[in-house]
Length: 175
Image (cartoon, rainbow, N blue to C red; front, side):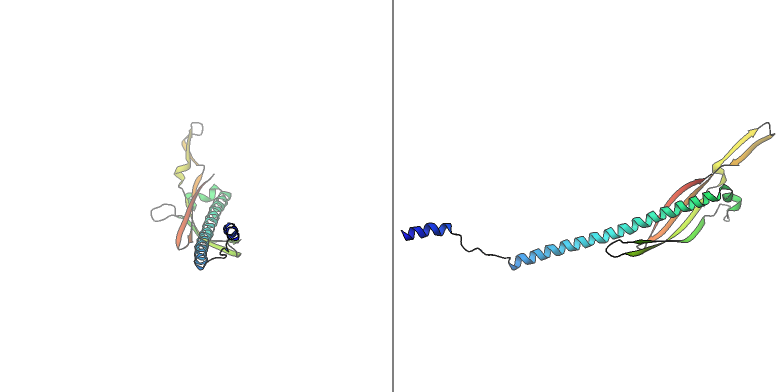
């Protein structure tokens, strides 16, 4: 009877189970964590570069708009073809401003630092012929009067990012 009882109880009593992790399990877990850490660090570096690239482009847009606004504030009279420098063929030369430096305090990452970008501006003013009106009247005794009512400005802003030249072009009209 005792033998039968032991057999019955022996089947229901759990045997001592192994506890803890084996060396292979620990090594596999360490390798997986290492790959995950490297992927996260790679993603962080890419995000850092994207942040700097986007901030530089936003700064270039700001510089271009400031130049258009400044020339607009000077007025149309300052942009007549006679006042602008011309090349050997008689075309209006672009106005070049280099460098325009913008600095931002920022924290792209864990450490706060200063972001400094050097921009180069090239402003092209369209000729008078594009924004001219002709009027004629018999009262004044003239065949036609030409009037320049606006000038088009194309502002190209260039800067260097990671040994590559980036640029944007913004257009505006000064009336």
